[in-house]
Image (cartoon, rainbow, N blue to C red):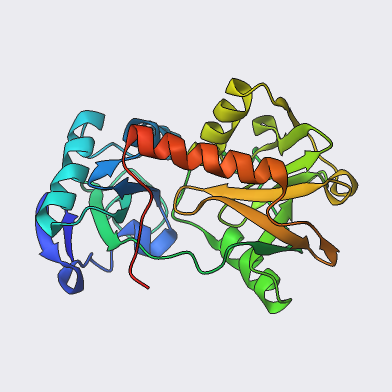
Length: 287
């Protein structure tokens, strides 16, 4: 694969950054991940706007305009002659003098990595409640998708050690926040529940699309603070992220759920229909 690094195409093994790069030294970077279907990007502007917000929160100068970055994404697809792909944009603060201060920094490091689409590992997932808490909003802006992913890494490690596929994190108040790499939803009777953004969760692009679809189909939606007991008493659960879309949850700890639940199945179908309308058909990969 050819990656775009600081305006130049380089082969993946040659895509390197200096050891003085602050993304390497401190996780001082932001990133976003999006997908291409049949050569067309799904909601690139939403992803790029979130990246710009992340960079602003971190006080990192954008390496290009939003329009230029969208052009760069298409250029990466064309250079690799690939139609179905996962693309990740990473922008670090670049290299600087030793220490955490940000006054003496160079140009940002700008990378677009491209990967062939891969088949889902499983049709449903088990969530593992973990002791690791979501970083509080007064410590780090929750809308900033930063490259310092230790909170999620440690949560996911704890969950997988316990035999789960994904971690379920609580916030500092003890309410459900999100997963290590996904947003989470619950269905209780005919109501779709999901943690509110004000609770300090990442505003997922797929999360927003699911809420948009639910409202369009007349489904009652509640974005609120959700206690663990309410979640475990729900009829269905699912997670969302940009690579996998809508994924049913078959268990949270020892609590099991039907998979897919009826509303989960409808939302998943509506989501992939939305992807096909706006981009292209979902990936059909060789077995």
